[in-house]
Structures are given as C-alpha cells and as structure tokens.
Length: 261
Image 1 (cartoon, rainbow, N blue to C red):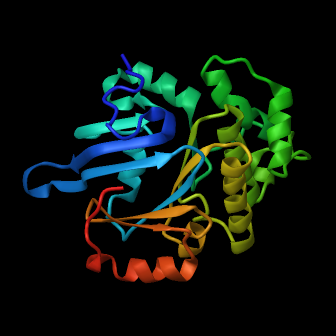
Image 2 (cartoon, rainbow, N blue to C red; image 1 turned 60 degrees about the vertical axis):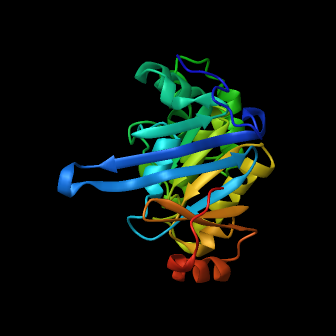
C-alpha cells in the first residue's frame, strides 16, 4: 500500500513539499550497454512553486520527470508526491494516485481526434470513474481561452490551442502537481508564451505545483527556479532565473559542483 508521509526527512514533512526525491537512481540497459540516467538524485520542491528542469541531451531530465510522476519506477531511492510515497505501491494503486493527484502536459498534446475539446478535457475524470462536472470543465476551458471552442475537435485547432486543451485537461481534475515535458517545444513564440503564462497561473492563481522539463532558457525564465542536471546528477539551482543567466549556466554546467536541493 502507499504510505502517506512515510520515511519523511528530519527537517521537513510532506505538508511543506509537493515533491520529494531521496537518492533516486535509474539505469537503462545491462552490462557494457548500461546507461545511468539518474545517479542518486535528492531534491525537494515546495507546494505552489514552478520549477524548470534543464540540462544537456542525455542528462536525465525526462527520466527524472518520469520517475517523479510515477510513470517509471526508479531502481533505488524514494519518490514522494504530495506526501505519498510512490515507490511503495502496486501498479493499480499508482495508476489511481496519478489520476487523482497528478496532471500531465506533453509536447505532443495526446488529444483524441475523435473527441471534442470538452470531451478531451473531461476524459481523465471518466477514466478515473470520477463525477464529471461539465460546468467546471467549461470554466477551466474559458480560463485558458477556449470557452468558444468546446465543440471543436483537435484537427480544427492550432498547436497553441491544442496545448491549451492539454493544460485544461490537466487542471480539471484539480491535481496537486502538474508535470510538463517540453510543453512549448512544438509551438511558435507567441503560443509558447501563452502556454507558459497559463502554467504560471496554475501556480499563482490555483496553487498548483508545476515541474517542467525544457531545453529553452526563455521558457525556463517563467519558472520560480531552475534545476540543472548533468550526467544524471543534480549540479545546480538558480532562483528567479532570467533567460540570459540560464543560458550562461547551461554553457558552464561542467564547472558546477554537484549539490542536493
């Protein structure tokens, strides 16, 4: 069974943190072909924060997000989301937890072409067997600028509008944490800016916690803080980031000293 608040650290419990990783490691492959994607990563993120995760290709960004969100299991270490240890439950329990507490936004939108905007938005609620509040769904879609697109299908929307549907879908279940994997990677500059502002609103207006993997220093500048990975290890943190400062840090990751956050 999942254990709420189990194995909490001495200095802070789950009430103060939305996400906690303790010495998380993950290796893909075996023997000579083994690749250590994560190497003993420890971090804690407070509730109601917007954190970007950055690093060079192969640094472990996506693996970190997948393990933190319960989409993949680490080989060792502890993952806690909203005070609940994800590494302690069965797959069925993990699926139920994700549907109730975690939202996802991906680069490829993952919308069903045969469903309308409104139907795509409430689909996770139906899959979880939860009551569908269509008024709430309309409210969320209006908040993301799609109140007049409820009956449209994904093929009738721009890329930016599709990503807004994905954000509405993530918000409608009122998750504690939203994980976003390169959410602006397929968008033009204006649409990307709009999506990033919506993620900011999810944090500042709705009190969600957002963890976003990105390669773009401009996107990272919308976050409250940036975590930097290199070779599967956490090698730095920047608070109140600017695009120029993030780009500079990325260019000198090898000069940083490995730290825990």
